[in-house]
Length: 233
Length: 233
Image (cartoon, rainbow over all chains, first blue to last red; front, top):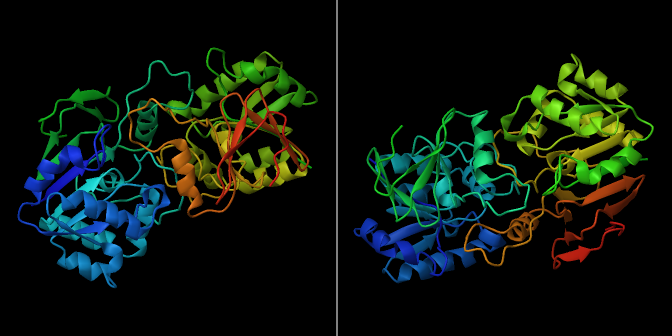
């Protein structure tokens, strides 16, 4: 019994924060009025308060109350009682470090497996995978482990970016990076383009949004799946 | 007493492996005929043998013998006796993990501080900094530590990439990532564009190549330095 929306990004080009997914969020959270926001990933280094204000503004348009997890004196108890959780993007290394440091990784996982509604964007999407190892972020802090929630049986690469065929840059493409990941790791990876998300309903997982997603399995050529497909390995 | 060349990349657009820097390498290694190559970073997952063959071919044109560190039964002893070392690029997490696992980080550092000639490209450049935390790579393996050689008193961001002002992608720019790094870390960062390198001669450090480099210091606006500048904080 699971209920998750796992989104590549909070914002797509040319629209405001969460705008592209608001009607789906409204449906997803239809029986829920209060959502705990995990601001630990601190995009661009903004404070927990500042980041929570961004989330509050985004959800105000669909009438949801957002409370920052950092405002509770006991975050473990807060998550035990939470009706729903939203984890925002930013730096995945910082997010994972803070989840472990505040001892909330285990309780968050337990609540997700009990069916609590969970929405994550970018870093908050990445952590629903088996490990954070297909993040695009800079390792600005050393986390106690790369293991994450394992709410889905694969890894997520948010903000998936197709190779720029006109580029003269010699840094690795996203596809090369994931290929390097698969020289050492066996789990599949879903490259979620901006504007795509996964809907997890019980044990079934569907690709949503208008775009295709790119699937990477160890020892296979990468391939595309269409929006609406069930994700299965 | 130090002698290092710390290069953003092995290859610039439109030229072959090491071609852009070969005449400088020839001068740098003029009294050295044999160089130990550290292939641990395995770009694209190629084997240590395959990667060493690439380096051998690159250095053959200037008449240098390249020996893979992985071919020695005792890599620590090999580095103690090495006349010079070249560390190639690939995945920095894998490189750092292997340097610790094979117990060679300390001896490599000691030899560099004794004046042994060291050349590094990309990941092999990144590890000359204080920590590997300004790498662009994916965390495909969990290293025992992010601490690196500290041959220079700052961090390196190889393959530095200016923001693409036409991009519609919402993933963080390189500059945003480094800004996030500085919310937690105090050391300066040098963004080395492809085609740039640092020359370290004793305690003096100079920017080489034709391009400017971008400097990031905590709490300051980023700024540019010209080729030929001494790097000092």
